[in-house]
Image (cartoon, rainbow, N blue to C red; front, side, top):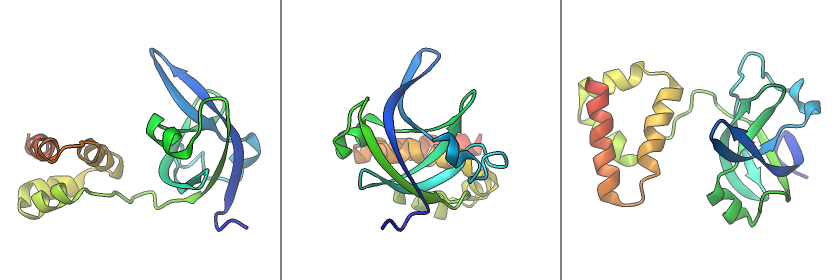
Length: 154
């Protein structure tokens, strides 16, 4: 028995968005009425896909919602487009932002940037945090921290 409130077995599919193509799992229609999607159309969720932990958002499209599944996540889960994935999730804290250590330390040392950071929406903070967290090399992470601080001060 799962500890998660919602369970979905769904096929990993491609979702075309203009020139871009994403791998996604679509939310079954039967779950739409059980989630606060009208109030929170980009509902943050946490859970597991094929047993691997994730944090994501349900994204709206014309007639349904989907969760993006990165190539890296597909690889970790041993999945490919066209296969069924077991997705188990719960509604996450909508305001939570995981701040990389490098950025947290920089904000602790810069009151001006920290005040601006705290005035941003959680979504904008998540975007900046993601930019830093996805850098592989420490020097790239540090360079991106400086970029973010510059943008905050601008």
